[in-house]
Image 1 (cartoon, rainbow, N blue to C red):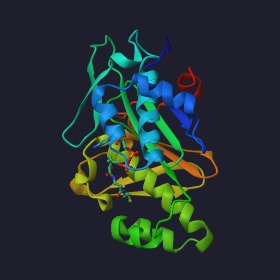
Image 2 (cartoon, protein in one colour):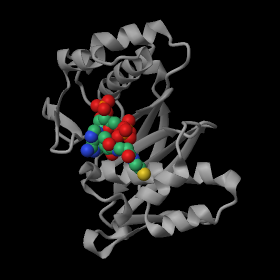
Image 3 (tube, rainbow, N blue to C red):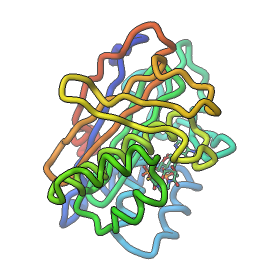
Length: 245
Ligand SMILES: CC(C)(COP(=O)(O)OP(=O)(O)OC[C@H]1O[C@@H](n2cnc3c(N)ncnc32)[C@H](O)[C@@H]1OP(=O)(O)O)[C@@H](O)C(=O)NCCC(=O)NCCS
């Protein structure tokens, strides 16, 4: 079993691969429960079905690193906005997680803090980033983007996007939190810093953000509520050995 202290977060990553490797996929399918298998079967495209199957199997395998529970034994329940948490078995030390998957990549974070969120995006994904930023980002973020040289705007857009998603996922309240009600700013010698609109009643000092680029096409952001005590030590781990069996 792996140790996971109160200020540690483990970020597990898995490159899904194209073409798909049949062996981890077959193994993954054996770990899902009936509801997950039904959800997987409902995807129209093979690549979406595979991403769902592999990432939910990864989640089960990852959780079993921290407790004497078999991967297929975990039971989950979804909060009012869809955030999953462990429903059973009961654990001596609470364990929290969040999951994200995109075209070709899946990530799962595990920690001892409930407000934990992660987002991974493929930065080559086709988006009209100027339009989306104007529509959803805070005014200061949109200004920041517009003032960057054009060749840096796409990357910066996904930087802000993943940070926003990670924060929203940590809060677990989905898009009921307006995306323009909080804003990120960047400087050379600091990690991303958040500002909240006064209506949000949230303290920026209580949040820690981390950013990673696991491969040139992907960006990962992680958000965790530190309650003002300290920040976390984030360790990145490869989930491939777990899925390859
Ligand atoms: C559902 C949402 C939580 C994330 O969606 P997403 O980025 O498309 O998907 P991700 O792969 O990162 O995360 C999906 C996983 O998050 C988890 N999740 C679902 N609802 C969640 C919630 N309310 N809070 C935290 N996690 C949630 C689930 O494990 C889900 O996996 P599953 O769908 O395979 O069961 C939500 O934020 C959303 O719908 N976002 C829309 C995207 C958007 O418009 N972004 C604009 C940014 S500028």
